[in-house]
Image (cartoon, rainbow, N blue to C red; front, side, top):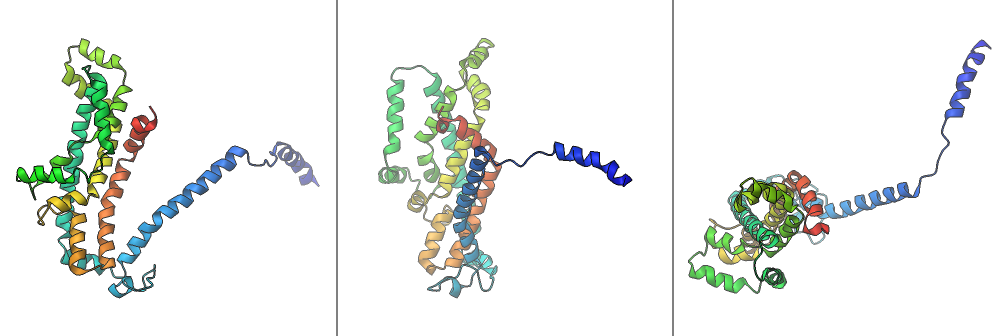
Length: 298
């Protein structure tokens, strides 16, 4: 009896202070629906990658079956060792790093210089030249393939890194992206640097470039991924294993040994890993560059 009397006020206070059950608001429902859609789209996007990895562990007969199964009946991790034995895959990876990295670096440097000129320098016909420069984006790369090949052949750059990299060292898309970002940088910063005695080059390297790191990193990642997956130009220019990239090497391997899906998808798995690592490393700069640059609606 005494315990009931002592505990009754506590129970009463707890009952009065308890918050009533509320129905979820419209914002909460929208957030949960958006999360569900994101999870669904992510699962749909990752399905081919999961299939690629699983098939790379299948046997030759299982991967070539008329009705292939998704889950391997027996796991064959030795497929990756076979790939390295039958194909100089590590050499192809190194060549791809050199080709994609060198091309992306040169594209970013030339795009930054040209974008700064279009954004800050005053010269006659700047708008017309920029419009013509952007109009080149409408020209398919296949149209310029033969003229580029003739130019490289006359320079005797066939099957060389000069011929692989230099024809793709300029990009109108990169100029547009960086120009839009440069236009958003206050001119007062440059004027203050000029008052302190900085010349045009010092202003560009010490003021503009540090502030444009997100956009520059975004362009660098874009171009690296684009050139990493480039098949057409390396297929035309490279003739030996000294400059052959992964895409070209796998095409030659398929033409020579037939379509061995387990080995091809094992190579595709290894090729995809560097891109995934690169994206996660540069994700912060990548998102900032998209939202703050020319694609962000500035």
